[in-house]
Amino acid sequence: MARNPFTRENSSDDALDAYSRAVVTVADTLRPSVLSVAVRSGRGEGAGSAVAFTDDGFLVTSAHVVEGVGGGAVFTYDGQEQVFEVVGRDRLSDLAVLRTGTRLVPPAELGDANRLRVGQLVVAVGNPLGLAGSVTAGIVSALGRSIPARTPAGMRVIDDVIQTDAALNPGNSGGALADSTARVIGINTAVAGIGLGLAVPMNSTTRRIVSELMSNGRVRRAWLGVGGATMALPPALARRLEQETGLRVIEVVPGSPAARAGIHVGDVIIAADHTKVDAAQDLQKMMLNLRAGSRLDVTLIRNGALVDVVAALSELTGV
Image (cartoon, rainbow, N blue to C red; front, side, top):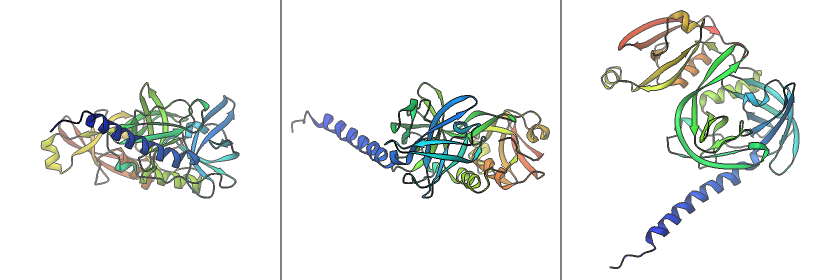
């Protein structure tokens, strides 16, 4: 039987068509829900993006987009304008909630970043370089990254960040990172380098942060003072503990409860409050549930040995 010389080419075209259809569907669905943000402060004019997520005018964006301002203006990709006020911001998660007077655009559907896999298609929608309604596509390059964030209380670390190769430029911050079903699974937060973009995940922890910002204008949380990244445990130890990963400490804030408790850079936290810690998000959830003054039992691995320490938590302020 003669080989069809067009089989390989047709297969490639079909794959490209499927990819294109997915990106076009996300773009058509999300562009109306992603707005451009314009602010003016003592530092000058600034711009970013925001995502509508309720029917009554609430938007989510990056905290650094609205740093130092109480309001500004938002624009739809087709040119409508409305003023907004800043309801609350949380620098530690780099999330902020804005509110317009009325519903301006249809809300986007929020997804769950905990279901993401490395290599998965993602689409970014935002306002890069003032170009409203811009769309780029790429993949999830990595999960569980950490990035530094400057706050009035000093440098902090934003944990559990999504890394993507979808092109992001100044102005994309606060915009949507979506999966192939147009669900928002991240809020773009920074451009770390050429071909490297980062986004704060949208999951149960960040949904709670957004909810607290809507209700109270701030997030109250206990503070341990570590930044870390997920790390695979040695096979023998993983079998013994029935736990595959832990949180490798990459930063300990000087003078923090973690520093006073004797936690060191390079330690791997595997449990806190008698609960397994598999990733940064596990510790984040605990800090939202605990209060200042609580004592936190922490089990960690140091030089191959299990070590137990007790940290007296304080309240995280200045974020």
